Amino acid sequence: MERMRQAMIFAAGLGTRLKPLTDSIPKALVSVGGQTLLDHTIQRLRGYGYTRLVVNVHHFAEQIKEHVAQNADYQRLVRISDETDELLDTGGGLKKAAPLFEDDEPILIHNVDILDNVDYDWFHRQHLDDEDAVLLVSRRQTQRYLLFDHAMRLMGWVNTATGEIRSPFEWVKHPDDAQLDADALQLKIWRGSTEIVLNMFAFSGIHSFSPRLFRLMEQFPNRFGIMDFYLQTCHRTRIYGCLKDDVKILDVGKLESIAAAEDFIK
Image (cartoon, rainbow, N blue to C red):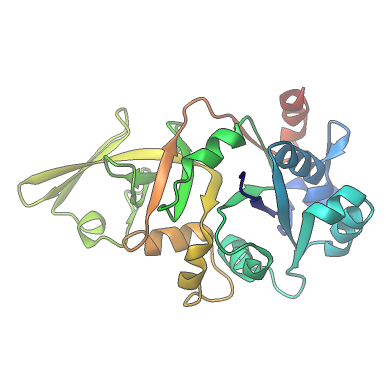
């Protein structure tokens, strides 16, 4: 039997980069190609069989609630996680929404202002039963990379511009020596005479989260980022990267990206 598919759509942000549009509406209701960003995301996920969608709200929250209430199909699909009192960031927002999900099915995490070409049937299959989270990554050039070992287990994060490394593994955070190979997208680390090679991949912002991790979130504050959570717990959880180089992600976060979004949808 096909298991229920559930997802969280982050829609609570202030949308400051989309001003002046977001002076009167939330970014989730910004129109692209004749539909709101929220509609694009809901309909795309519904097309892949997602039957439980949790949407968090904060900025102009009532407008999003009304938009959902006016669509009979959405009323069956969508549950609202209300952050009107306090904007909780991605990790805190997911933690607050925990009661709205089934206990044992992976949760697809998707930002409302992202358009993409991901096959979510394929991505759903990448999250194996014994994995706590799966992060979709690529070889895209950036300054901030996630670090993975040869088995694609998350080991940390590096900023290539500053050399800063974040990791719960002391030998990764404070190696005896380190060498960054930007062309090969590798960070070479030495522990004494032993060389360890970590692969550097760019995070797409799309990931699959096991509800098993909610228990670890209990020790975190109300407001925190999901990547902060991953980087603080990856030494005692099973968080893996899923490499897909042909993934296309368009962040509709700025006014100048609206035209590109129109073309992307076409």
